Amino acid sequence: MKKLNVLISLVIALSLLILCTQIAIATYPINGDFETGNLNGWNKGSAEGNYVEAGGHTGNYRVWISNSAGGSYYYISQSIDLTNAQYLDFWSANIVGYQYSGRVLIDSTIVWSWDGMQMSWTHNNVTITGYTGNHTVKFTSYGSPFAHPANYDDIVIKYMSPPPIANFTNNLTNNAGYRPLCVQFNDTSTNNASGSYQWSWSDGTANSTLANPIHTFQNVGNYSVIMTITTTSGSSSKLSYINVSSLIPVANFTCANYTGYAPFIEVFNGSSYNFPTIFNYDFGDYVFGSNNGTLINMTHVYAYAGNYTVTFTEANDNGTSTTQNIIHVLNASITPTPTPTPTPSGKPTPAPKSKGAFLMYFSYIDAIISVGVLFLFLILLSILTRKFLINVVCIALCIGMGLDMLSRGVWADGDVLLIITMICLNLYIMTTQKGD
Image (cartoon, rainbow, N blue to C red; front, top):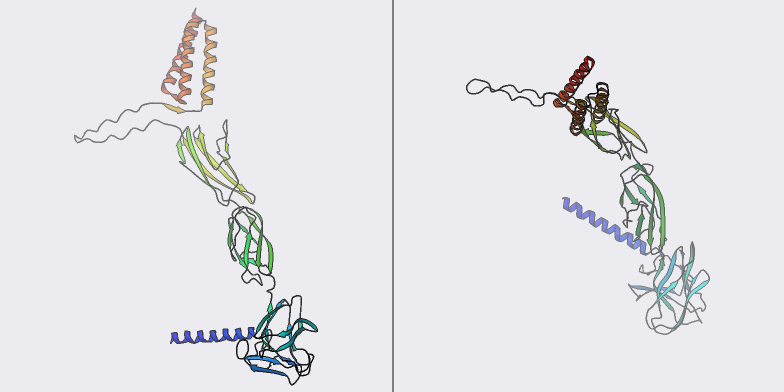
């Protein structure tokens, strides 16, 4: 049953198509091939002398126009809209093979004429450009009385296609959106049959030749979009503008570790949403040196223990976004002693002794200041006590300690013992000097 319905629908559609095609062919002029078997659609100059007879150029019929009265007394005519008309196309003959005369007029102007013999049908294609509106198109037999008649068939007005009028729409609201902006363009031009297209985007990308292209604008800006359509009748262009902007960025970052021991090297990785153009880190430690970073990914050293609030800011032309995280930096401590593990004998295995009983991390700036103070202190002692040899040794030990601290960046247990030894030694010297 469904197949039958589909078949019926196709037959109806085909019948309508044939009907519409016949109407379109018969419109300019009406009954131009005379296949109705009469002069329906035409006006006659006389009740006699104009006949539709068998034996046309194509089909079954032709028009036969007598000249028994002479002049242009006999004719057929029709009022036709000649706007954008380009050619008057028809066939003519005196099929009996004698001399005859014929004229074709638009209003009172002769646009075609013939005097002579035509042994067979002859094709005529007359240019008739420049007319607008309705005009009377007349076919006659012309000459002295009782001259041989003129025959015409397959009369057609050929029109120029009107020039195209370019137009298009898109799927945006108010021709604006946020980057990356993907836009569907749709051709709504008129008189665009068999036209070729050229789209330019003004964003440095290649043009498109599709009728309905899709294009993505990657960057912020106001872009002029030009569509040009070209047909055999001319070309036309349409200009429109697309405004592309950015959303406010969404600041976010992650850290390699959020907790560590001083000096703690932290790695920050920012995330880029909605195309930020400016980045700024505030690391929150406010110490000597750089406390800010202006790249999306940064590395920073925390010299001291503490809890630091890190602020990350992103910005673009549309606004600013900020987010924060906390970094926990701890003092380095004694390595915790592991819990003894029982052995098969039931006696616990002794835990290994920890190495480096005392460690305290500090900054290089502190180390330099500390070494400088100790150096001045020892020089002062050497001057006061006049024990130059002993104090030279102390100064050398102080310098060695300082170099050791600078090379490792830490206060170690050996450095602390050296400091205590020097202080005790110099106190002893001072006491002895007083006794002398």
